[in-house]
Image 1 (tube, rainbow, N blue to C red):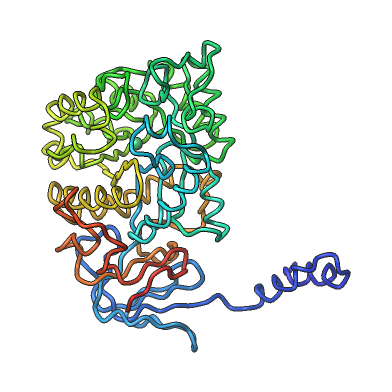
Image 2 (image 1 turned 180 degrees about the horizontal axis):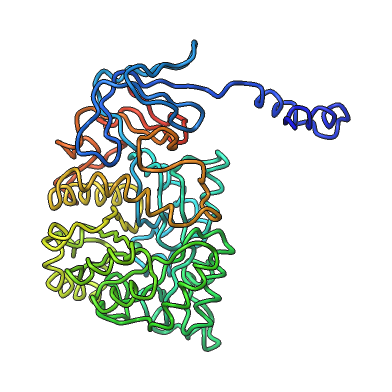
Amino acid sequence: MKLKTILKPLVAAGLFAAASSLVMAADAAPKQILFKNVNVFDGTSAELKKGVNVLVEGNLIKAIGRDAKAADGSQLIEGEGRTLMPGLIEGHGHLQMNGDSLADIENNRNWEELAIRSSVNAKAALMSGFTTWRDAGGMGAGLRKTIDAGLVEGPRIYPSGGFIGPTGSHADFRNFTTPNETMNGPQSAGGRLGMTLTADGVDAIKAAGRQNFMQGATQIKIMSSGGVASQFDPWQLDAYSEEEIRAAVEVADAYGSYVMSHAYSKKSIMRCLENGVKTIEHGFMFDKDVAKMMKKKGAYMTTNMQAFSPLLSQVAAISASKASSRKANSAQKAFKDYVANVNKYKPKLGFQGDCIGLPESCQKQNDHQIYLGAKFFGNHYYLKALTSVNGEIVKLSGATLDPYPDGKLGVIQVGAYADILLVDGNPLKDITVIGGNEKWFEAPARKGIKTMRVIMKDGVIYKNTL
Ligand SMILES: [Zn+2]
């Protein structure tokens, strides 16, 4: 039965006043927008497809080719040989972790400040070309729902809910003096807000995972090794046992989704992969054995490139604490073979920004990481990390939980979501056209990226400077 047939009697009966606009929407043909004469980077190929048109209908890509045409009266965008490419995808970001450091978030920011700042971060991310964002911990689905309802602007979001980690881990935001919540103490502020969940042992991990899925997480994030920006855990810490990792995987499986795990040490990485974790986060000790196991398991890795910058210790979240600075030094020494190993074994690598903070510092950090990734691995490999590979990663959330199930993400293909950038120049040759910047802290503050001329998400244009 047609929508119109169902709604008409309701409208007539005066039961459903808003339905009249729905009837009109059901009758109207979907809106078309035609990008004319563009060179396409499709998210995977090393070559641009030159001189084609790309037709968007509604929120999907409808046709690609020299003859692709739009219906009369449709909006035309003259590409004039610019590069049309997929919107960028953040594989591991933290929109709501927007204090200067973990301690600053825990001690000085309440829910309203964090939430409002997260919407500022979301808008800045979209205006930097990020049309999809896998959030790697610190928030549930609230911001996604607000963006998807059209109330604030931002990327599509795949949230992980609160970080799940054991007592004293990278997910433990307490101060030294805060009693342990699992031993009947009060929670950290992060715990009260659901940004982090302390979970020791199988049952607690299962409960934490289920809590996150209930709150709208599309995947769950565990901390299976120590980290740098946290206080009490050496980065080498082997934080979760096999049984504990399996418990998280079991819960995610039950929801048709997967587990992403923060893992630095080789031992932790291998243990995660052997027990069903699908994406390794950071993965700095990636080597031949890890590459083999990733392939066998169909697993992915996302890595934050700023970890390899000599300027790492100047990041506010690290310089704020002596423990973190010391850890950063020792970690950098241990991770020296990562870049060579990635170039040798070519894993499925996704871009990871992993910024904690507000737009200005995060833009500088991400711009610099885009530059470093392209420099270490080549523009093509890193553009795939920023688009199609992360597009595959977000879809691991499975058909049931995926908030955006109608098309692929991170590719320019017929049937994919119309998440599109139009840029001056060719990013396969020059990574600066999508923001890559050799400078980090000394880079000037920016609003948007000048060479990024059009930003479209879900068929809607958010920026057009043509
Ligand atoms: Zn992170």
